[in-house]
Length: 157
Image (tube, rainbow, N blue to C red; front, side, top):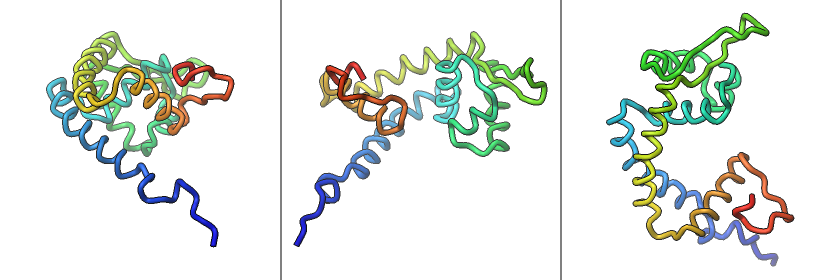
C-alpha cells in the first residue's frame, strides 16, 4: 500500500496553527487599531494604497477581495477621516483612482509602529532570522513574492 504524501499527514498541516497565530494577532491588534480609529480592513486598504501609490477602485476591490458595492462604504469611511482621496482618472472619467493622503500616510505609520509591538509579543519565540524566513514563506503563499532556486537565501526572496 502506498504511503500518504508528507503534506497530508495531520501532524504537518498548518491551517490550525496559522489560524491560532492569526487569532492571537487579531486579538491583540484590534484594541491598538481601535485606539487609532481603525479597523483591520482599514489597515489593509491603507497599506495597499501606500504600496501601490494609488489604484483604481476596481483594482482595489479585486486586490482586497471585496464586493465593489461594499468597497464604496469602506472608502467613504476612510475618506471621511481624511486618510484617502478619490479622484476621477484623467484617462477615463468613468474610473476613480484612490490615493493615500498625507494624513493617511501618517496614520498608517503610527498604526504600523504600534502593531510592531503586538507582533513582537506574538512572535517572541522567533529570532530575527526565523521571522525573515516566516515572512518570505508567507509572501510566497499569498503570491506576493516568488522565490527562485537561484536566490542564495530566503531573505533574498
